[in-house]
Image 1 (cartoon, rainbow, N blue to C red):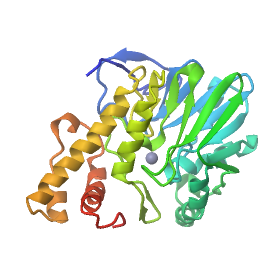
Image 2 (spheres, rainbow, N blue to C red):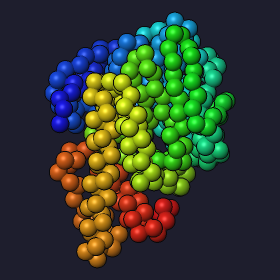
Image 3 (cartoon, rainbow, N blue to C red):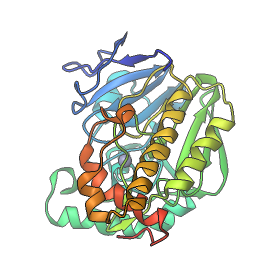
Image 4 (cartoon, protein in one colour):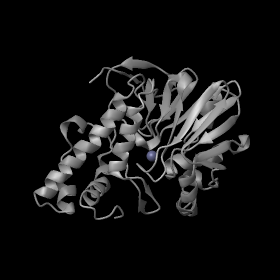
Length: 311
Ligand SMILES: [Zn+2]
């Protein structure tokens, strides 16, 4: 495995950004902290889903926002410029519900058309949490995307190019990435999870992830051979400078995990037995959030035998 540097969890000071060589697995994963990915490019990680922002002379572009994490005060410590654009990677609540935090700046909120079509489902889930009086939901509203696109959208803003691309059906039915060539960074949303088992993309009781399509998308992105230094994950710590090795690891993870499930099916195991007896292959055994495995094993199982993807 190629050596790489990992961002250090800044346990106390949000703006204390340090990188060092070595492993951080299991340390500070649950503490929200900010990592500098490239000049003007920052990611909040830990304590839920990742969220990134890019500072330009004309304002700020934010990628992904969760109502449960108000990152605006920390952004304000870096810049007082307005949030001009907000993009969300997909319709899951931990990436698409945070527009409320930026409402004073009235950003243009961009998503794929698929995500816009999924909005009523997200709204239902959001309102259910709001009705329970949960945390930040309590006094907030879910704001819908204001612009949708299929395929590719190029945004020229503040001297940078933001290439937003609808990657197709993978983690969900509409996963969007953003590539910034001048910064050699690509925001992957939940198509990439570092050091953590991926989620099944559950939204209001509907399970979206399609394993083979997800593998295909990862191969497609790798195959572009983009000069990207850092692919920023939707969950788990960004690996600054590791490049496409992260995408390959995510792809290899799915191939290895699915192969294990296939072996167990071949041995006559039921889904329940697989969920109980499954052992994560050694290469991925240190991944965080093993609780995400049980529902995802059902996806491997159902998709291998073509028994459907829902429940
Ligand atoms: Zn997520």
